[in-house]
Length: 422
Image 1: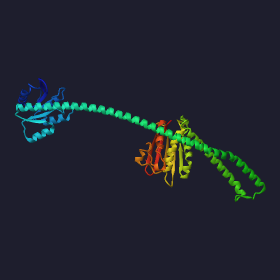
Image 2: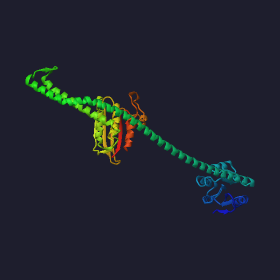
Image 3: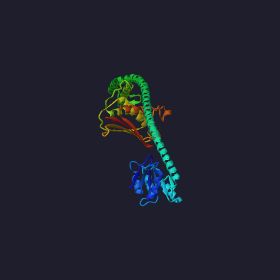
Image 4: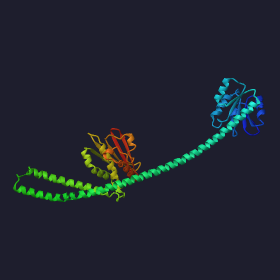
């Protein structure tokens, strides 16, 4: 078992199975260093893992049990001892022995018999280099720690700037949205007023026309059943005119329905209040506002509505979201078999209402899909697109505490999923 020869300053471990060799080294080094001694490889390893490990090791190669090469390799594999300088002190001066020693991790070779000046110079040099490495490592660690703290502060600063930028961008979107909606609201209010007047004239006069027609038919039935009017026989007039009048009345009711929605749309900034609303009815209203485009393109709209309880929303804002998504679905629909499928259900796990709008259009490329919620990004600039529809929709859904996501199969389909909290 190893034992210490007490003195001062740096600790040097002498490892040799020959007492005479240990005495020679100890006599040369004892005045300058604290010495530790081990008679074999295992003792050397034990000494190195004690609390006061050596600052340098003078290691013999040929020893019983664990030889010097193996001791050196094991010490270099351990985090605690890998930086201890090891000098082989050996009678073996073959070049291959030196190569093996350096490969094991030694920093120097001293050949026996030992020359005093050579030993002292090399020990002092390697201790000084080791101390310099330790100091340099400490400086690097301190510098690294300082840089890490600075990097953390920089990341925090970037994150704060990012949050500020996002907030400013969100405010900009909302300002543009409010300006956009205010303009649309003004136009919608004007259109509603201009359309309402002639439509009121039509709706008020339809009952009168029905009465007049019924009176004429009664008169003709009593007097001249075989009369022709406008190239139509009495019988055809009797069947066709009621149908035409009924169609005019139904058209007037639809115009009135659209006018009411335009009025509501124009007042949505004033009615910025969330109320309990049936989401399925909001979707129905959105479809009705796009019915002309849907019919013109011969699009089949499938509705799979679940039993959804009323949820707290601003119905006019949410209606705008669905209109934006469905408008995109209508415009991207393929020629031939065109369809839009709208489904609603409840996600009980997340306590959300899910609205899924799927079209069988051309899909969205991945690079575009990653940008569709960016303000002003549009692929329809030449067609008058502003790039605000989906960003505004995203903002509205976020303000409702929900989310909006998109999936796409290129050239096949696109699915928008809107989630709103119950």
